[in-house]
Every structure is written in structure tokens, then in C-alpha cells.
Amino acid sequence: MSITTTEEGIAQALDQAIGLMAGRRVAVLTGAGVSTDSGIPDYRGEGAPVRTPMTFQTFLASETARKRYWAGSHLGWRAFGSALPNRGHRAIARLESGGAVSGVVTQNVDGLHRRAGSARVVELHGAMDRVVCLACGQVFARQAIAERLERLNPGIDLDTAIRAAPDGDVEVDGVEGMVLPDCTVCGGILKPDVVFFGEFVPADTFEAAAAIVKESEVLLVAGSSLVVNSGVRLLELARRRRMPIVVVNRGLTKGDSRAAVKLDAGASEVLEHLADALLG
Image 1 (cartoon, helix red, strand yellow):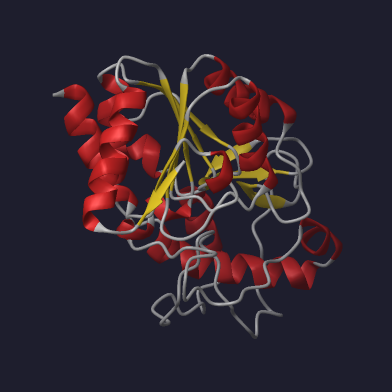
Image 2 (tube, rainbow, N blue to C red; image 1 turned 30 degrees about the horizontal axis):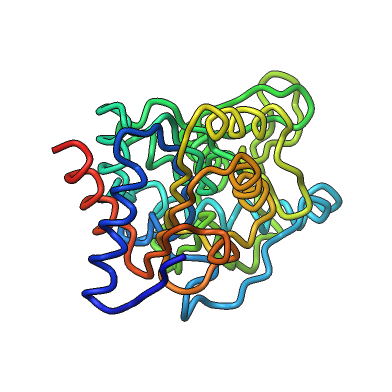
């Protein structure tokens, strides 16, 4: 394994990564570090604030908790939903359209890979631009629910200064009088279609992600510290299949010891360089 932070060392590691990926099908696994250049902060990067995300159990158990979550999530959505794909997202889409990448598995919920043009994307933890009914399973567009929430609560200050988080959530107080939209099909509880803390990645979603890895010959991990179990499971699947693993991430990751090449560098510039080199 090669790990370096010097300019010369990174250039050498890039050459090694290109040599491993050239002419082979590549599965891409991305994390929050791919979206930081779009203005979405990283959960675990250096300087990231300590957060205590709401668990699924708390969300289910208390209407007050649901009001607090929806108030924060709605305010965060205003900033989160306006984020645009960056150079890294576009480079991955180029690699896929050029035949070098077989598919993208992302731990992000921002939908930016889809918006960048990637066709085969498995969103391990769901997507913030969808809302699901917990009773009947009906799926709604997030924008439609956001508009309903505004109509039901005209007093919400949507211009309040907020600090966005990677899941579109922020801290909000004083929401006791808030009215929540319910499912227009059955009246059930609505929830953004993301995997909360305390929830498991759906089995069919993980199987779709594993299929991308199994169909590939190299695993490229970009912008993920690989702390979350779902990412580690995919890394281990690649390792058991003796696939070369390339890790691109600022700082240490749980996959460094298993990587053939580790680049301690920003995701956008590395992905752009890889796309240019592999596609010509």
C-alpha cells in the first residue's frame, strides 16, 4: 500500500491508481467528502461539529420529536436542496458514460450523483429529495411536501440563518405548535426517505450495491472514512474477491490497511485527473 501527502508522492500514487484502473471495470463507493465542494459539510472530517442525529426510534415514539426533526430538516432543505454537483460528481459521471465505471454506490443522501448524470446509482442511505409514508409506503417528492409544510405553517421563518448538515438537518427550537403534513393516501406518518440512525440499510438496496462490486474488477473509494458499516461490508466484499482497492480521502480511513493505493487528497481534483487519464 502507498500512502503519501507530498506532491511528488501523490503524483506517483495517481499513476499507480491509473495503472490499476486502466482497462478494468471500476465500482465507485462515495462518501461525504465527494460533496464538500458542493457546500455540503462532512459528518466526520476535520473540524466537523459534534452532532447527535435523531434516531429512528425517537422519531417514531414522539410527535414532538417529529416536529423538531421536520422543522430542522425543512429549514436545512432550503440550503441542502440548492447544492449543485461539483467537479468530482461530474468526473464520476464521465467515467461511467465512458465505460470505465460500472456503477456508483453512495453513502450520501444529496442526490448529486444522479443530478450530475450518473445512470447506475445505488443510494445506500436513501435520498433527501424523496419522502415516504411509514404506513403505506407511498413515495412523494420532497419539494411537494416542503410546499405543504409551508402552507400549513405560514409562521415558519424560512430566512432564518442556518448551518446545514450532511443530511439536511439543523437544530430548531419552539416547534410545539407546528402542524405536520401527513400521507394524502392513508394519513400515515411521513419521513424523508433516508436511513436514520437506528435503522438498517434495506436488504434489496445493499444487494444492488453488492452487485455493482461483484460485476467490477477494481473498487474506488472516494471521500469516505468508511466508518459506517455498510461501506465496510462492501470494502470487505472487494477484499475477499481480491480486487485492487483505491482509496481517495483526506485523512485516515478504515480501509487504508486494505488499499493497494491510498491518496490523501481532495476527491474532486483526483477524480477529475482519473477521468482525464482513463478516458483521454
